[in-house]
Image 1 (cartoon, rainbow, N blue to C red):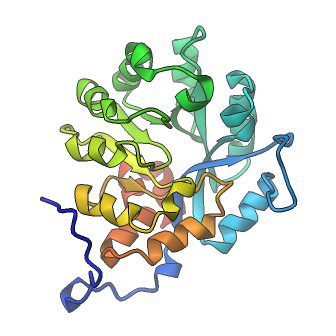
Image 2 (cartoon, helix red, strand yellow):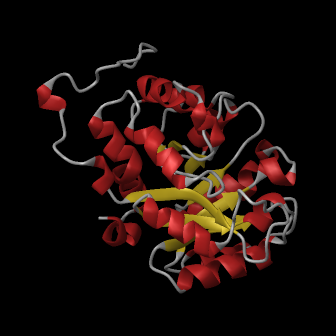
Length: 274
């Protein structure tokens, strides 16, 4: 059992210390984006190009990133075009894997989708209820039923209350579901209440600036279903520093930065991230 009480000296017990410089851990970023064409909202303090993302990843010792285009996440880009562009980039690099984005409001060729997901550089299924303005509960069978049948991972980012994610995860136990961009709206409670062990949370996005959001999550839910993510637009070094300097055990930091993603995604990324 976990509690709401935060441990400010988590590694005071020498038996729990990890003799390793955390900066040496090659992190796995399960939630990132890049722009091919320019997303239209670049500023002097914001660069969304692939080259800049790769520079930020190198600075933060991120070995692998799972990406979609900014255009599909924010500007309504057609999913097929976004997937072509993401797969093209991922095929050319060992350090990038492609999320395959679908919009369930439109007709989906599930045979073609399954074939696409078998590509070595495809990491799983991505849905964007927050950008495409729909309730994922209205498309449970289409998305999570399909994912459960083929045993793939689904990443989704929600604007609405997230508690219902527990019911979806329990109903489709063979689908691994990541709640993208840890937020305040029931993410921790949904993970805590999940019964089948197939619900995860990633840490992408600016909400991680809250001073105890990560500590509360680890204390409520443990650490093995929390994944490192940056969102790309949030400087990766910021999210990494948030993990490295959190009031959580060193072992939890390593699991979050790398090991839990390797367990979830297996050999496909293990050779790159170790």
